[in-house]
Length: 621
Image 1 (cartoon, rainbow, N blue to C red):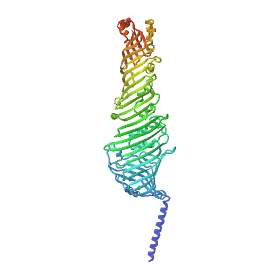
Image 2 (image 1 turned 45 degrees about the vertical axis):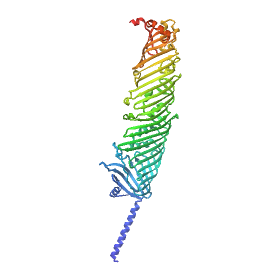
Image 3 (image 1 turned 90 degrees about the vertical axis):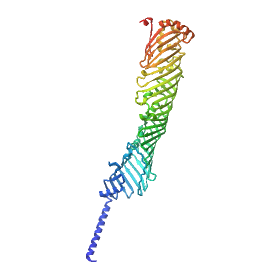
Image 4 (image 1 turned 180 degrees about the horizontal axis):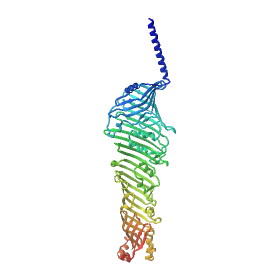
């Protein structure tokens, strides 16, 4: 070998050695620093993992032996059928450590499903999600501060395994941001491209605001009012969740098992509520159907009273319908607040001294366009109640609600003196167009009652006045302001074995009779009464009021303005009872005498009327 060749060989060896030393130093330096990867290499790598309709881009990438591959500014764009390019997913940075087999993603965002999911026009699809992956050995995936379809934990981690036709993530651990108390959920998920299913199972503790944004992102608004009704739940809620998605047609199912303790539902304080919430959605044809099922095996208020049953909410193109089957032992005000259906002021006339038992079954629409769907029936039992001051016990009735009409059937109650009430009633909401235009009608029979039993209802001093009462009343009107002035109806009433002229209503007449007819106070023993009456625009009229005793009786006619409390009554003294033999004989004979000399007039308030004698001169002038 020539000397020149030897020199070339030595130079080559020296050069290779120098390059090797430089390369070794470079590689060694990667243990202490990250080497930025050329942008063109990064773009080529992104192009390889992009697919039809999805474009992946990264701002920069670097590699170091300590941390592995660092990728920042990751974006996934939707470049599908529309001309607009929109970001559907992103991450602040991704770190891939091949030595520890760990991928860490910071700030991952997948805020909403594809725009086609939220489009106002729906179209059923039935296409396989045809994806074939490469087999990847198991690795750990850690998401720091992710935002995935409304779920925003502090961190989420799990063990991932990728095969050609499935992705599995086990040992999922989701930690919520709150420090005190610490809350988390654990579980696993699987995406199977053979069966075209996504399934996940999670359990742990969470708060309401952790879950609600997920329902918003899934665009299931019919579930939100029932979810938002829970307030002031401050303790961590034991929760178990299952998710199931059909990748072929995007059928979605979510089931939640919740065990909240303390808090309020529509403002009603509850001690605990064990329940299940199933949320699902289906697109069939051009209809988007959402289903929410709420099973409430038991909810208990602080007094130990229970609410149990189930609600099924079905929404087709944002038109919700509700099916229910519930039983409640809660207070009436709490029932009205939880149901959020009837205006509580419509039932101001009744006060439940003990909590009622309410049963309701049927279905109803939540939109005025759907009132034909309303069909609910049930029953109510109230051990003790007060109706406009009238004390009642063992009050019970059946009801049904069809379209815009609420009917009360087979109403039965017993008064404090044993009087029996039977009743039917109706509320007509007139298409729910005007809350001030709710019409009512009621038919009531009252049997074997007592006068003093009615004293509170009639707001008259009847206490201590005996008298057996029977009555039949039919009444109708408008609920709201000026109800009394818009009453219409008719009825009849009879009283037996009473001391009627000792009532405040007739006290002034008794004194006046004593002045005009000396000694009459000793024979004022009217024990029976009867009257038929009509009511028109709040004014009650009668032409045949009778108060009858063994020797003297009174016959009256006149009117009473209920709203204004204005009485206009004329009574005439008669001898004997109208149906007695002596009465039938002497009434025609004594009529001119009693008409001219024994007629009296009452005016003013029914509680304290003013009685005047109608003299002959009054008739003339």
